[in-house]
Length: 78
Image (cartoon, rainbow, N blue to C red; front, side, top):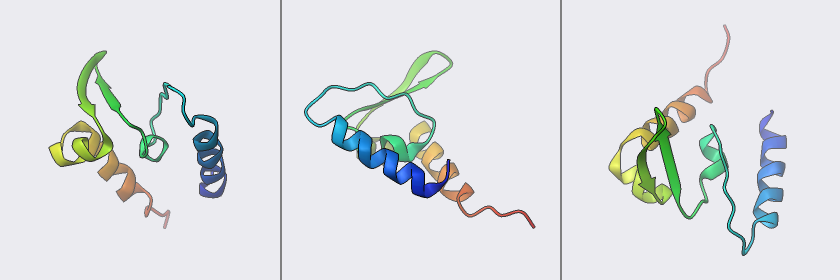
């Protein structure tokens, strides 16, 4: 999905989930950047859990995924 449509979908989801408990399964970090709690699974087990800010400070699996996706945004075919 292109960035423009992804942004529109994220905004729609944000409006729909207000004052609700919602489970979101995602591979794109942008999808969960405003979550209250993130659970990172690895090999079928919980690798880490916390707020996005806490997980970034721990510099673990979540932080690595964010870094990889951020880097890949600038990739281009030459």
